[in-house]
Image (cartoon, rainbow, N blue to C red; front, side):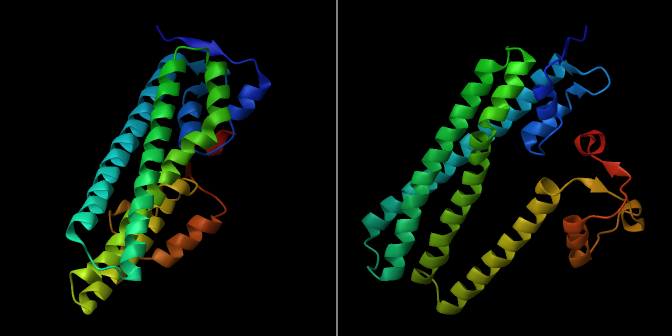
Length: 234
């Protein structure tokens, strides 16, 4: 038997139909606009998804902090050069270790909060997530920052082991991959998900029009046939 809860609070209804974050989409998918009810079973599944996501963030944060800690220890034992570039690289590596630990703490707090409130009433759950959503999302942001802080020292320290030309090639490759990663993340995760299928999509061909696609994703098109429910109904 499906368990549903009628939502009568207008503020909670407004929260459900606003926002486009990972939390907002999962909660909205549990909500029926016609009956104004929350499906508790779907909400429980949404909680499992969120908890799994932050568990992965926690594990990744611990792994990165381990690599950063090893790098700091190796610097001490190997007695590398005392040049300014090397000092700066190890400062960034040490600072990244601190950021990793803070990210792990944020992920742990999020997991503990979600596990502790999942059996509460839907109104309390939605209000609580809305209240602390910025803090929870900070865990995602820290992951990206930490990846940057992990990559910068490598791009500097590589000159200590390889010739200058190899370092330039490595730096350039990192910059290209970073730009591609930002573009793909924006297109798939951040950008408003609404589509028109093209002949290329129907024929399973790769769309190489990156500039045109990026422009359409940023500025949109007048009519979209396929949209997320949260964008289409509210």
